[in-house]
Image 1 (cartoon, rainbow, N blue to C red):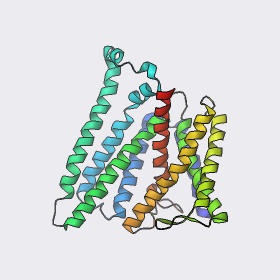
Image 2: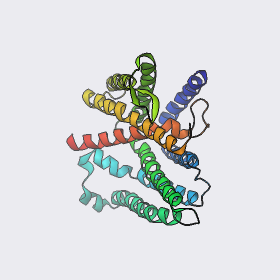
Image 3: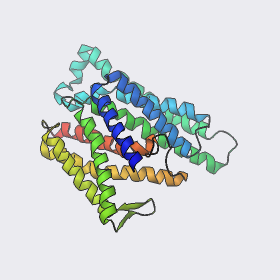
Image 4: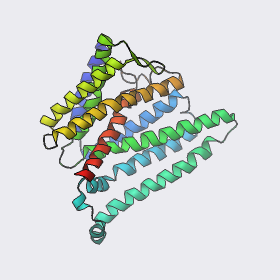
Length: 297
């Protein structure tokens, strides 16, 4: 526990510095590196990283993440519908290409990955079951890491939020996870998902959701005070629910791979995938919530 706390304290301080002081282009490179190591850890869990497909799949996955990162113009237009006049954008030329080129890259990588990954995964002399498993493992990693890590810069650069929504995306799962751990340890009696994660309890899950909403209220009254309080608290509530499922998804993957941690890279915390499991789902919840807000006002 002492090692976990020290590592967490250092990690939190570094993360805050990265969010608010690191130039945007360096931040994007950092996310690309993070996605690569998470993908590599994931494949190592299934003993698939040494397969010739690894480098090709990694390039495709990172290209997908990069194409989504470059869709900031589309996201900004969605966040502010008044700017989403495609006819006017076409007249300006430059803005239109900012919308079109990342989308073109995304679709190219999407179709290329969908075709190339199964073709290469099915080559060789391995048994059919091994090839089928390999194809599924690579497909999941390609989409899961490629799409979600690409959302990180979009959330960080959300207009008018000064990176606060990105900090929200990180903090809510951390608060939820800590509250669920201590609440479950103190009062937990009913197992939440015993076959996947035996230590998780319903009592801990409820504690996690409650403290997620409390943390959301703190954000609504401070850093996100320009947003409607009910909206921020609603996103925190949804995040507190689904972020816990993100942790379960990684637990399911580890059970399927027969490993305890994705790696031992971070002292007391396992690997990068171990530390980003709930954050990946949190990114989806926050991103979708912001998009929905732009449609309903």
